[in-house]
Amino acid sequence: MIKIYHNPRCQKSREGLELLEKSGKAFEVIKYLEDIPTKDELRSVIDCLGIRPENLVRKNEAIWKEKYRGRLLSDEETLEAMIQYPKLIERPIVINGNSAVIGRPITNIESVLNQ
Image (cartoon, rainbow, N blue to C red; front, side):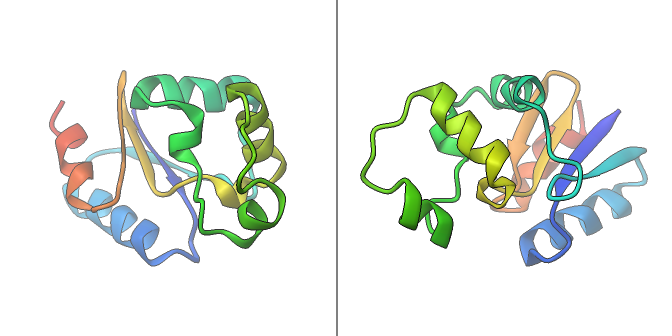
């Protein structure tokens, strides 16, 4: 089943959700700010994306700038930061099977819908 990691307060995330709704395909919405992923879940998402944890971080967030900017973090430390402060997680993330994309731009989502 398709999953979207969604933040209702984010315009891009709302646009991604709308795209999924229009697709007519079944999907699950994960409001990751309320249902914070475990480290293993987050690691699994990162593996599907094929990126390093630091590439999933929203580096313009105030929390990142205040606590982490300029620091060299290990992958584990980056995962811990995203779990402690889930607002740091880039969004939306759409997963379909073993494929995943960050929905920025929204057209990225189309590439995983037809798998």
